[in-house]
Image (cartoon, rainbow, N blue to C red):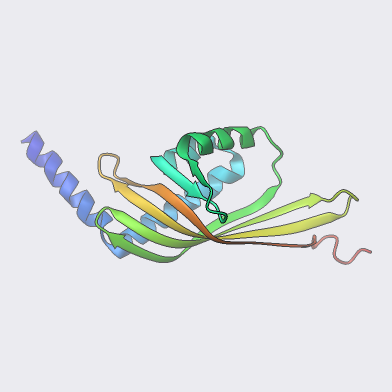
Length: 165
C-alpha cells in the first residue's frame, strides 16, 4: 500500500510540475527566493536552488561549473554588499517533461561612490536562457543551467546626487 501511495504522489507531482501555469508560478517563486537570498548573502539558499550539475555560461561563452560557482558565492559572502535591488522575471517559459526552458531578465541596482567620491547608480541587466528541472523526490524545481544571452550596464549619478553639482 505504501508503494502505491508513493507512486501516486510521484505521478501527481509530475503532472502538477508539467503544467505551464504551475511551473511558471513555482519557478518564479524560486527566482524570488534567489533574489532575497542574494540580497542577504544566504549562500545555503542559493545553493539549494541550484542543481548539483548546474553550469553558468557567461556572455563570452566561458562555462562555470557548480563547484566553481559555489566557491564564487562563498567568496562573495565576505565581500562588500553594494547591491541595493535585485530581481529576476520570467519572460517566456516552455515545459518539456520534467524540464522547463525559461527566458528571464535579471536586474541588479548597485549604488556606490566612484574614485572621486561621486555616488553612482549602476543598473546591470542580464538576459538569460535558463533550464530548470523538476526533482520529484524533492518536489521542487532546481536551476540546471544558465546561458547569458545579453548583458548591459548603465551608470548615472545616483538620484540623491543628481541635483548636486
